[in-house]
Image (cartoon, rainbow, N blue to C red; front, top):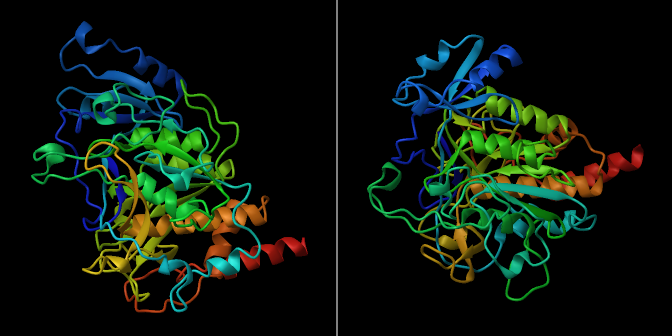
Amino acid sequence: MRLAPLIAFIPLVFSPCASAEDAVRYIVHFVDTDAARAARMMPAANDARADTPRHLRSLAAGGELFHVPGGDPSRLAGLPGVAAVEEDLLLTATAVVDPLWKRQWYMHDPKVGVDAEVAWRHTRGAGAVVAVLDTGITAHPEFDGQLLPGYDFVSDAAAARDGDGRDADPTDEGDWRDAGDCRSTRVATSSWHGSHVAGIVAARSGNRPGIVGLAPEAKLLPVRVLGHCGGRLSDVADAIVWASGGTVRGVPRLERRADVINLSLGGPGACGITFTRAIEQARGRGTVVVAAAGNDGAKASTNVPANCPGVVTVAGLARDGSMAWYSNHGERVTLSALGGTLRERGADDIVSTVDAGKRGRERPIFAYYAGTSMAAPQVAALVALMRSADPAIGVDDVTRQLIDNARPLPGACPKGCGAGLMDAGATVDAVVEDRARR
């Protein structure tokens, strides 16, 4: 399954590419290292029968990735010592692009705004690091001085569109598609989704014209996990391990782990062993994981990684503070943030940084998007403010403060929007007060 960013005019939709690889990659978990080692030594397909599974690589969080000609997982389930087999899901991205730019109402609106200026009395995020796992990053004046050296985890060279697989350049090469691509009849221009998400988090302040992120003094760690048609679960899981300071074979280790990882991507399905382990490891290293609930208008429990244990899951609210019509919802939601209305009036959506290119990069601009992809990075930015105010605050305490200081929704949400609307001012105030009492 491929992971996809969650933006609007097209809500988040799971739409795997039409590649022959889609249904023939599986992650296998073994009962012990001896069984895993034996499986890795299986002969390549060109040295044996044409339907022999071929080992691709070991995952950082645990598990062995196999290519299976014909896509029959039973050939893996029968290997000695197999504990579980899960499809290497293809999670895909979708976004709404409305090239209008007026103002950032979600930051300061007296009814629904997140009270950014109240939080900024204490901090603007200095010292915190936010990892954005997405389509990558494009050049934009809003990112000058904001970016740390990131990484491209898209292992499929064709999907990466940069001539190779994984490398140290997280630049977004564009996710446009032609009719017939990604099992879709529709033509789509590049979304520059990762740049839009990153701008919401940490667009720098003081430049004109421009916007400002909720944590404008935090640093951004751009991590590319989505390419043409989306991204592989296995790549995203490795990126979670790496961004949280873990070791991934063949990838230089980070000097400074991220305080929070933003996942504005997803697809339908249960949270399997691979994601569960990667997120557990990230949390164990002190990294908070924030995920968009999804744009299917369904229960968030049906969307991965929003349904993974330990994730801060964020639903989307419309301009009036009610649950947005596209947002996933239900008991799995931790809290909500403003995602935009996604109607005719684009100014009721979330403005941020993108590129003007329909396919490849052309020039930096601003555009309105909507979706839970836009709501999640507001919460990730708030976590950065919390970590800036109190670097020692723990992962579980972050979640508790987010929940305890959320305020009642200004509008209706009969299907469940978690603890309420995120409140940056009240939450940072509470973190500062708790630190002073220690």
